Length: 104
Image 1 (spheres, rainbow, N blue to C red):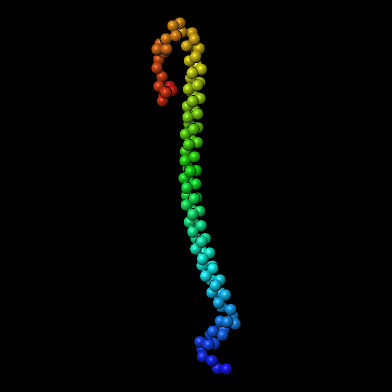
Image 2: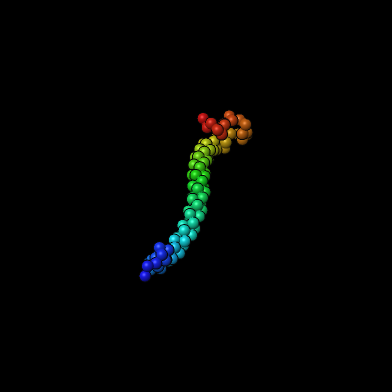
């Protein structure tokens, strides 16, 4: 019943079903590669989404600023409207020119 060390190793591997562990190890390595690829794609998608969010926030801030400027111009227009109606020849050049950039 004395066997060589390689035979004993083979017998022990068969008893412990080490070949199944080797197969499981290979499957786990393949799954790990797939998951790493998915993580890379998700990170790239996240980076793209973060850039879009930054752009959206900048656009929202610009919109808010433009809406405030529009409201200011509309208020000025409402103030100037009665003066335009009262002016006899409706000569628009009779009023001082106002800069749109500096409302005062």
